[in-house]
Image (cartoon, rainbow, N blue to C red; front, side):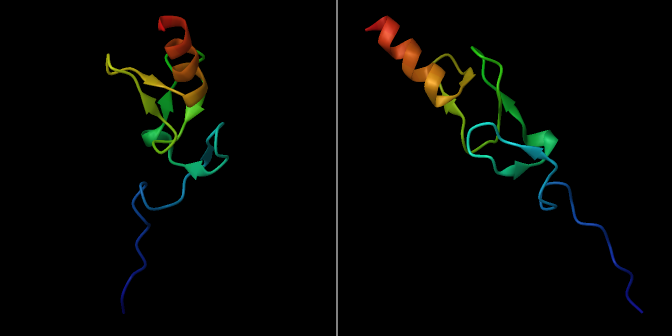
Length: 67
């Protein structure tokens, strides 16, 4: 008889909630905004040129200040 295995953490759905889209994600995939430190899922991250991770709001604000 086959035994039931637990799902890998990246498939399991996760226990954390993205502050931008409110979708669950796994803690190991969490990203933090370099400006406001909000917790983001990997789909809501807007990368800057320097390789840092920003939420869309902070990225847009940084763009306004530069230009």
